[in-house]
Image (cartoon, rainbow, N blue to C red; front, side):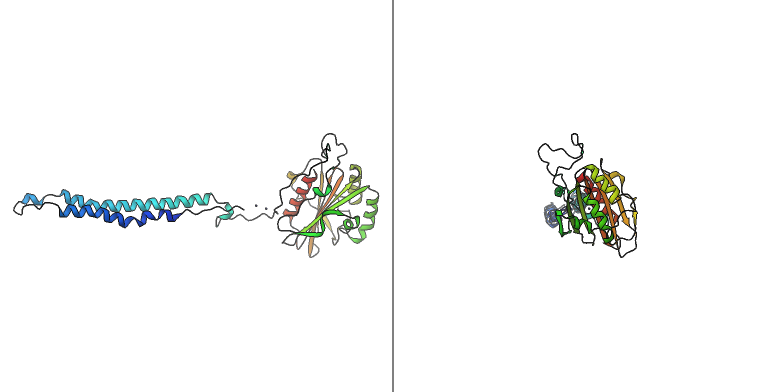
Length: 310
């Protein structure tokens, strides 16, 4: 969300000698003219025909004309060189570097280059042949989306393991007991989490919950948090919710399911959250911001986290 500086110097000083050398060229060209005038043999005064030698006069009169043409030609060449250099400089620049042609950011964040973590020997990816249980054999902490450029990491959610209580703290107090009971019955293995805050005040938290099987992950998604419905448990501070129908379908990831929610605008801040189920793992991605939780960075973050799990 984009950074290249292009040298647009057309090196005009190298073109300057063409103009600076012009007086010297005039001095050289004037010498033959003076010699032609002074060395011409004088005609007899009594011979009227002797006053007719017009060729030298014409020859002398053409010199200033030639010099003027030379000066104009040199000027045109220099200006042409300057114009060409400027044009090449502009066309080689990024659009955002040209005054008047700047393209504003669409709101996406700049994330580090993403890559899937290495797997244990002979361990398949979750949605490949030979992994019917859709199990994530990679270290769950390595599947967490990293913080974007310029973000301040949350020291409590630093990409490591967290306890059940920390995960439950994302929900309203009255919702926590029932969710805690559901986690006890769902064969939860562990939870990894990461959080950060961007300069615009958006707070992001990502929790990855890995269960013993796909069946347990699906049951917790459907019965406990009721992902995809507005009747499920609400996040802390949220009073009302609606489904987010604007998520771009073009960024869907095969074999995963995704549900996005947005808080109704009732408070001073707003929260967006999404559930992603990928095999034996369920992700909760939340973003909150004073005023309005922006759509673009939320969709971007959810899409990237989904790709890491798929």
